[in-house]
Image 1 (tube, rainbow, N blue to C red):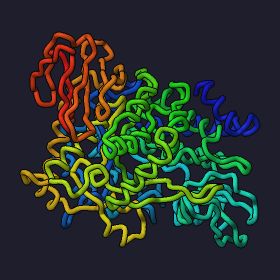
Image 2 (image 1 turned 60 degrees about the vertical axis):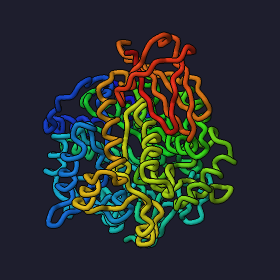
Image 3 (image 1 turned 30 degrees about the vertical axis):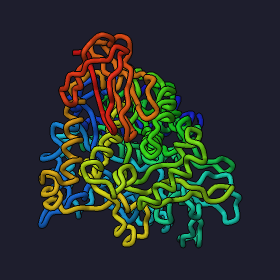
Image 4 (image 1 turned 45 degrees about the horizontal axis):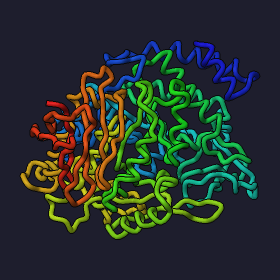
Length: 572
């Protein structure tokens, strides 16, 4: 192993412990790497993604069909509706679990037997690039590890974090309005265990080297099964230290750097993606220096800013924010998303939208059937997340279905034109709405966007001309097919926000080899607008590659952008 890996282990555990940890990791790698067969992927060793890459995010049991296992049914859906549109699938935690729709993991090395087997996962990996979750921060309170801890068995006695009742933990950042400590009865009596997210999600103690080594072994096992993108779930809360906020700890960053160093040295086709639902500046800190932490980070500010633009018919904040993004470098990139299995974060909009605008955003979501989740702070509870289906949030249900689909697809176009790789939630692909009945069933706000569906019913609606699902799916499919044909959408392509009318977002994209140039325009308003193209387009006729329509520029170099219009133009 490299000196870099040795130094990172020493940064995490100190010189005294580092040598033993290094030796144990060396032995693990020597044995595990023999079991891993590298796939044939483009660009291994750099950022192995291109304009052809986009991911659909879905649960493993998203679709149901009589007498069929859910993972096999998901494969049927993907083969019929996703082949040729996206390159990858993010299957949300498909392991045995006890709560939080998969994020309370019981066994990291098993597939939920009610859904299928590793053969189903491997089969999907043969057709799509697979992303899965490495839930590092916590595991299920019903996991064998935690049960062994309760019995006092080694080495599990140090796998979890106990704190004396009454210890001042007021400085710890809280993502939920729930108790930080949960009492459990152990072989040594009652102990209070650190539970950041819920009583069923017990935090793992990474100050114990055995935990880090265990999770690296899990990581290598997942890569062996064909996983190519590893999503580090809730990584920002990983390292615990009393007296610290326990958010973005230096040793948390060191752990991310260690995973990245292992990938760079041994698994160059694997991508590390961090999930940190925090303000923008904190979020992008997980790029590190651009070469030593995550390859990709979630673009958490995009969902609330796009929603704000359509609700106020004003893309001004979106333009200003996008103009501050670091220029694409071909080494790191954003994972762009609008909807997810969680909700639309409020914190990533702070400092970009005013407090009044955030309140207006929250009010609009409530008016459209959404719910609000809160987190605990020293000042009391504050809004943390807006739980709503993105279709209902952007395009109100009272609109005619053709206009709803058009407005929604205009919003989704932002996923496809921003620098990075698109991550498209399954319910956005198929045009679903709020599932309030599910919230009533589970008592969880996030269930509003987690409805599981009968495949045959969905397929009938998707294939029925003029249905809302049909309009949304076909519109999305059209944009995705075109996007993957243009190198100007490569994650390393240059990106420049252009001046535009109040409701219009316009950006120029130029391929890394400068052979292709595009101007992408999205009108967030309900009125006709015009957009002036860069002077290089002056005196030319352009073609909208989405519609294949030729457009002649005005003498001023402008073209019309219709209400809720999406134009991707290039010189004819």
